[in-house]
Amino acid sequence: VQLQASGGGMVQAGGSLRLSCTISGRPYSSDVVAWFRQAPGKEREFVARIRWGSGVTYYSDSVKGRFTMSRDKGETTSYLQMSSLKPEDTAVYYCTIDPNNGGRYPYWGQGTQVTVSS
Image (cartoon, rainbow, N blue to C red):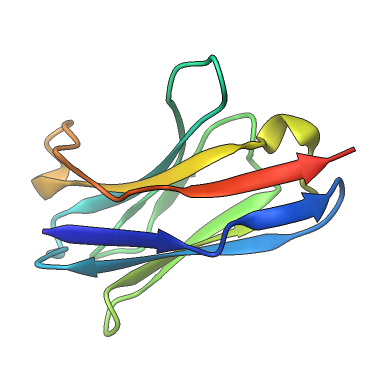
């Protein structure tokens, strides 16, 4: 299983970015694909997830209403549309898979840097 995250960059506060996560080897309909992020000096934190089969999404409180996660099942690509970005959104963003929605994330991509300036 391989995941490739892309789309990061530098943006001013209030701006938007769209991250992509291209996946090979999975996901299956029973899987969950998620985004996490890690800011300098902080622990990795959950951002959003999507149930691959149904498309049902769930967001952390810190991004709810500003970020939208989606997927293209045919292209096995997940997207994270980020709007109204804040400097505190600055982090490396990672995509990952929870196989069969089992509560574990054994597969990770390499991360993409998002920097939001004030």
